[in-house]
Length: 249
Ligand SMILES: [Ca+2]
Image (tube, rainbow, N blue to C red; front, side):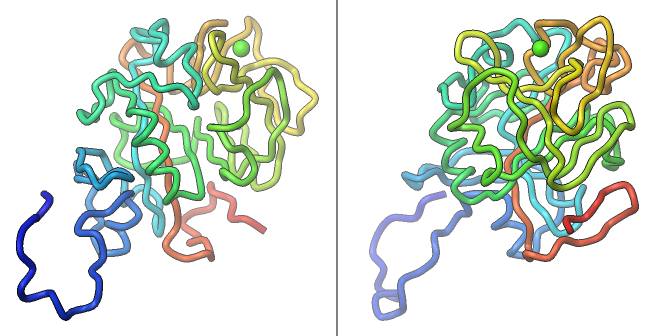
């Protein structure tokens, strides 16, 4: 809600904070911890509905920017060929797990409040995140709005593909090319420090044009989903939540 009108009572008070947050992290900072739908404002102070994950990773908040049923919608350009820098919204303002991509303007507004990006698998069918089939990186290491190219190694914060995992600073290969493929990694034997080799070739966390794996949670069932989120942490020091999530050195 945007309140306009006379501000008799506030005229002498100091300038107020925006009424609504620009990212889910602001809600966590205000003490809210329940996952669900929240209203954010974009850079123009226009409100819109979003989905916040405020509880799955203690001390951090994640704003959903994209989610789709992997097998069913993998051929939609929104989830296959449109890179993050392209405006390719679908069901924008109506966040859902099945077919959703937010507008570029809103993604950039959320990104301006975020330090990290994250990809999850089928989070809607799980109570907790156990970090299997999971990817998290920092915008300073890989700015997913800026970088485009073929197989290139970037340091990530944490990766887990089918139980094989690596932590902070390990490099992983990415692909992202306008007209060809959205940001993703795959099962090639790359020269990066982490890779998950599988034949035949399958894609992980996006694109899926080279194939999908029935053993990867984002594509393990016909209804399985893939998510992308932007987020950040309450404090610079990470919360240690369990043994399966390495904490940055
Ligand atoms: Ca591929």
